[in-house]
Amino acid sequence: MTLPPDFTLLQVVPELDTGGAEQTTIDVAHAVVRAGGKALVATRGGRMAARLESDGGRLAEMPVQTKNPLVMLGNAARLADLIRREKVSLIHARSRAPAFSALWAAQATRTPFVATYHGVYNARSSLKRWYNAVMTRGDLVIANSDFTRDHVLAEHQLDPARIVSIPRGVDLERFNPNWVTPERVEALRQAWNLAPDLSRTTFLLAARLTRIKGHGPVIEAFARLKAEGRDDFRLILVGDDQGRVAYRAELEAQIEAAGLGERVRLVGHCDDMPAAYLLADVAILPSIVPESFGRTAVEPQVMGRPVLASQLGGMIETVLPGETGWLVPPGDVDAWTAGLARAIEAGPGRLAAMGATAANRARQLYSVDAMCAATLEAYQQVLEARA
Image (cartoon, rainbow, N blue to C red):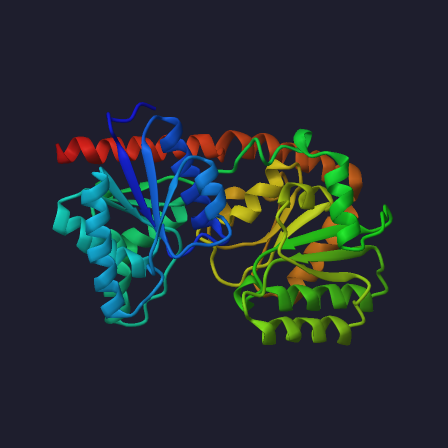
C-alpha cells in the first residue's frame, strides 16, 4: 500500500497498556511507518508505549483517557495544536471519550476523521446513545467485525456506505509456533509451577480479571467435573486484575471452596502469549457479554490450538463448531460442563487435528498484514473523498 507523500497519521487511544484496541493501534502505526508515513499516538501512555517507539512511531502524552469535560476541552486544544504542528493528514479515534476531543480538533483544523468501533456499547438512554454516536460522526466508521458493523447500523441508522468491516489482525510472525523456542515454553512452565502432565487436558483462559469474562461460571463447571470424579484437566487463568482486587479474591475463594487449588492457577499478566498458548491444549473464552471480535479466540487458533468459546458476538465468526473448536451458550454452567468434558474426551489426536484446521483458517482470514492493508486503504479512500 502506497501512502500519499508526507502522510501523517494521528491515532487517539486512552492508554497503551493491554487489549485489542491498543494492539491494533501499535500494528497500524507500524504499517504506516513501513509505508513511508509518520505515525503519532496521543495517549496517557502505558506498557506498550516502548514498542510503539521501537517500531518508529511517536508518542504524544496527554490525558485523553479522561471523561472530565473541562479536561476534554483542553485535550481538544492540545490535539489541534499537535495537528497543525505535525501537519497531520488524518485522525483515527479508538475510544469514545477521546473521540470527542479528537472530533473537535478535527473540525477546528478541517482534518479528516475516522473512528473504530472496537466494542458493542450498551445504550439504555438517549443520552448514552448520543455519547456512543460520537464514533459515527466522522468521515468513516471502521467496525472490527461483521457483528459490530450490524450493531452500529441497527443502533445509529448510519448510511451503510460510511461504515466498513475490518476484522482485527494477528501478528503472524509473533504468533508462529515455529518461532517459539522450547526454552520460552519451559520458562513459563517453571514460572507458573506447572509440571508436565500428559494425563490432563490443559485449558487456558486469557482475559483480564473482570466479571464479564465469565471466570466464575467456568470455574463452577470445572468444580462439577471434579465432583463427577474427573481428575483429567487443569486450567490456567492469564490476566491482570487491573485493580479489581475484590474480584480476584472472590475467584481465589471460589477455587479454594471447590477444592481446585491444584487444578486452577491464577498467573497474572503474561508478556509471552505465544509460548503460553503452546502450554495449553485448548483455549477457552467463556465471556458472558458479546465480544465485538475476540482477539483471544483467534490468537490460539493461529498457534494451532482449538477454542471453546461462548456462542455470542464476534466468536460466532471466528470459531467453526466441530472444526476449529466449539461454541457454548454463555453463562450456562451445565452447557460449559458438557463442553469442557467434550474437549477432554476429544483426546490429543483430535485436538491436534482441530488445531491444524484452526491455524490454516485463521492465518488466511485474520492476519495483521491484511488488517493493516485494509485500514490504510480506508484512509486512502477518505483522503480521496475529501480531496
